[in-house]
Image 1: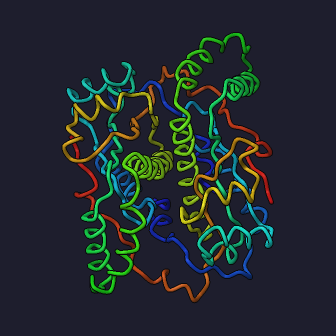
Image 2: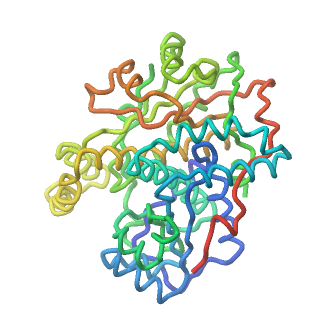
Length: 209
Length: 209
């Protein structure tokens, strides 16, 4: 099973070779892996900014505790969740579903009402946490797809969301920087690549009932 | 790239064939995919319960809005995050890291102090949300690994965490049911398998800067 081998191969890359850039074919595959991610109700309540501009990367590095990955990696994926769930988002999803599955939106009204009743009553903080969680499924797919392509990646929470929100103008779009990933190719000098992977033993992590 | 094909193949299975069970080799591969998941600082602050007992599945079905997946699927993965981050968990991680990477725990003290300074100051609600998010990366890996093995899966948030916590005795262990997944094999009668996948178009989901 190559997925397991790929997951063993990958590691959180600390130093990237800034001369090696992702080609566009690989970038499209990574985007597709994110797009295909599961999300609650299929709503995909996030947007993913892909940063390749060097000046923007330098600005974001300052908002990421100065970590080298931000400027040395080829691309930075910024997973941005919608802070609020709105009736309009649900309607847009229903229209998309109707169009793809050749259905009438009228036939989806009951389903839409169910979603609205369930989701729109959440407190704002709860909404924000819930949509942020969905980003982590997509992050998982990005890491797996990167490893499949022997592209290195580093998932990162070590950044200042408020500063990202400001630099990238996210608030005005109702978005919030939830989690990021640097992708590219490891530097030969990255010592982390030689360290054995640390994971809890199966018997500690799992319990069968 | 077979991962993309696998992600296209998978769907949130609504009806499973209750006569088809996962064999132990496949179950071990799924567990390994979860174990290899990335997590913040590598701390893996969760435990995964794998439910195969039919009586327990029936109890959990009642706490899952009566959804058929819970009893019809072969196994239910319950991803449980640790509600609080503790100094002890961090020390245990450092011991594990020292043992696997053949280091002295003394040499990891500064790193441990950094983690403790960063993590232990979080408010309880924030801790709970943060460790829950890590479960979603592992969920993503489980879904990808299942698809790779042509095993069907259904990620689910449609359950009552408090009831799960009670039924499975999670609170006493400091755990909380964050998200679950039913895994097994689709029923021929599951109509969902014939529906086209609904995903936002690339240009709506991504923005390159």
